[in-house]
Image (cartoon, rainbow, N blue to C red; front, side):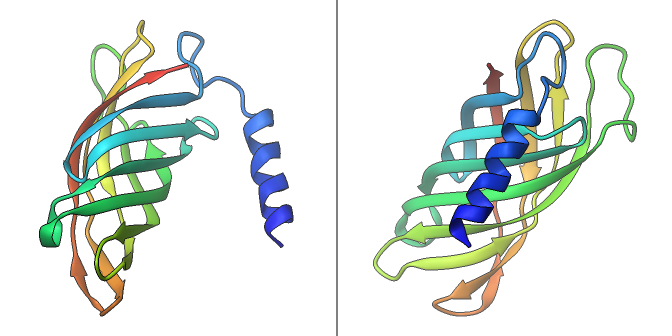
Length: 150
């Protein structure tokens, strides 16, 4: 099963064209907020992407933190004179490694500003969610970031 999923994901990445001529499909940068760390995004098409972060979480005494999301972008919801400003919504999961490891789900909602002539984006998101382990409870996250696309 793991091999099948890996092969399907690899095929999607290889078959994905660059989203914009000046920007490749893979972006790497930073996110500041809850969490704070390294952010990556891979566009799977003009409206679909996956993103992830490897970061430090400041909730409950801090911890090493990883999240991953599938994102759907609405590129025509907000129009701007230059670049584009798609709204996005997604679903994903997160893991925090600390004294009592934490596992939860998250629903990120945000804005991404894509520059016309530069391989850079700026993003702002909030991510309400639910903790699943070690207990079920409401959860949240929010961040501001920038990524450079290759």
